Structure formats: C-alpha cells, structure tokens
Image 1 (cartoon, rainbow, N blue to C red):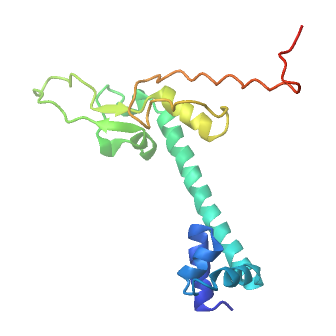
Image 2 (spheres, one colour):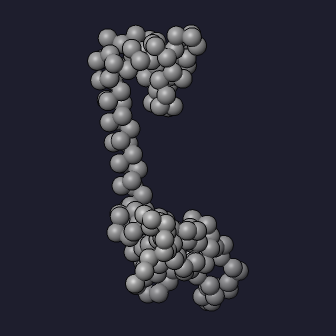
Length: 183
C-alpha cells in the first residue's frame, strides 16, 4: 500500500523524471531528498505503480497516435466528390460525413448569390493532398527521417510542395595517420 507522500513522489517523478526533484516536490527535505529518492525508486510497490502509470500513459499516447493517423488519412484521401450531391449541388456541412468534415481546412462564407445562380467559388477548402500523404507516410514510418529545415505545408501554412529537402553529405572520416589518402 502506497503512502500519500509516495503517491506525490510518483506523480512528480512521472512529470520530471528526476528522483531528487520528485522527492523535494513530494515534501522531503532538500538535504535528504536524494537518498529518499534512491530508496523509493527501489521499493517494489513504487516500481509497480510507476510501471502501471507508464503503461497507462503509453496506452493514451497510442490512442492519440491512432487518432492522428486517422485524421491524416482523412485529409490525404478526401475527394472533392464527397462535397457534392448527385445533382451537382454543394452539400451543407451538416450533410457531410465526419471523415470528410475532418478533411476540411477552411469553410468560406458564401457570397451573395441570386436565387438561380450557382456559387462562383467553392465553399470548402480541403487540406493539401501531397502534404497530407507526406505527413501520413512519415507518421507511419514509411519515409526516412528528414534532415535540414522542416518542409513547409500543413504545419506552417506554406506552399503546396514546400522546400526540397537535401540530405547533408556525410562528414569525412579522419585518417589514422593524419595524411591524405593516396591512390
């Protein structure tokens, strides 16, 4: 059974990752915090509670990662066809399915249109397909890690294709004897 102070220690330790700081946050004196932290970290009930709470956080993080992948997939695979009725009229936002609504970046205010006229512009702007596919692929681990400046796109409001990413050239390895290599 955990004491109240041990629970405070676990809460603080999960936030900061430092035993001494967590012990101070839990109410132990500054002078003895390091030794108490060392003791607490070895207690089986504290270890078990830390493991349980970390697993809980991982489950929550996995849920977030799944939701992110679903949102990126909705943005990447959305089609303008999903925004129209069969007769060519725009659907209202309430008529769209939830996945299509997640793919909408902007809803434009409708212009003043006479009764028999069609809207001159689209009321919906979808996220950029290329950027969305790129994000989804990177999230799922299909693309190697990019180096250099981050690509402009959904995250920063940049252009469609952003900046080309050129990997850095590998650093030359120093020779053992310090002399340049000979052919």
